[in-house]
Length: 426
Image (tube, rainbow, N blue to C red; front, side, top):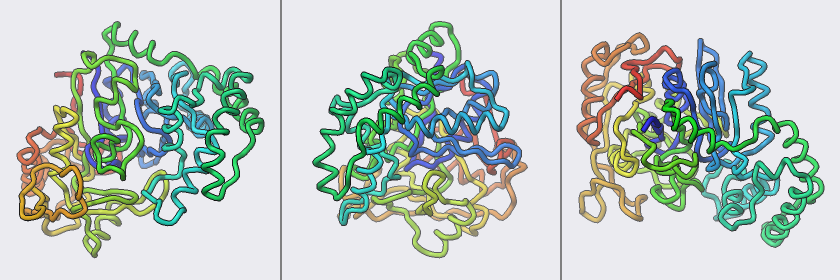
């Protein structure tokens, strides 16, 4: 059981990129197992920012190999652009990076359909318009194009002909026109040739790593509350973002996973539509947005901000089987003299400890008020270094969700971290 899963425990944007980057030096292999270029994992090293959408965050560590698993959906142009951006920074990917031949490909008409649906009156759910949902639709409908298909021009063209025919009526109904199969085939065959050295049997690599008793870090995307089965449906992503999705997405069995670590902000954010019980549509919400630079790394959209929701976090602990939580952006709360934490919901006079099946938009958050702090945190390297009020805040999280807090991020840079330890040690 040499594999550890790192998963978002809220509505995404929890800071998984930084935490995976912190854990990567302890790992031999980092595996991205779900989602697509709708993810934006932000790394800040030495004050310099890097945003990765598809390549695992562990790529910045030269000793670590990285795999993008079959559960992801790949925009080949974005993938190639990230490789080129890393090369420009002096980060070599050759021999260290592989994408699964089984991973499905995001095609131009997927993005078109996604945008047309979002723009249609009454149809928006707040997607990133990156074509992720339509690509997963093709996967489930068994008509998708996979990364391995990009390496065979004839097979690629044949699959595109059949795929486009299935989307034609949908596009026309939405007022759009599909590109030609020949045009897409030529473009994507070129991308396949450019990425040929990076496409292969990723699951085989992961299984060999397990058999070799190597340390494997499984990197999720989005968050638990956006999971297709466990989130606030239908305002969710199109994949299983929870820890259980790592098995199918990486091509391994559940007995290969030793533990799961959830990432959560010290407050809560959400991008796009959907219920958000603790949302602050006032000056305090704007303070959090400004202090936390809460703008989407993929879309640039301002994130909705609110108080920490222990009900949603308790749900994440349960459905992921979390052994530990890493708290990010604790330093952002320094701007506030007092803090509120949602400890339960109320719906029709009933107290709820977990999110309801539906009508999440109707719940009333039940808050506890905690003392804030005004001391700066980036120099803190352990929980004991934190101001007493910040220590009590962390302790309240642990008590409220029944899970210990491990790593605490106290600033954007890699070094701004308290209680960093080897995630494989236990």
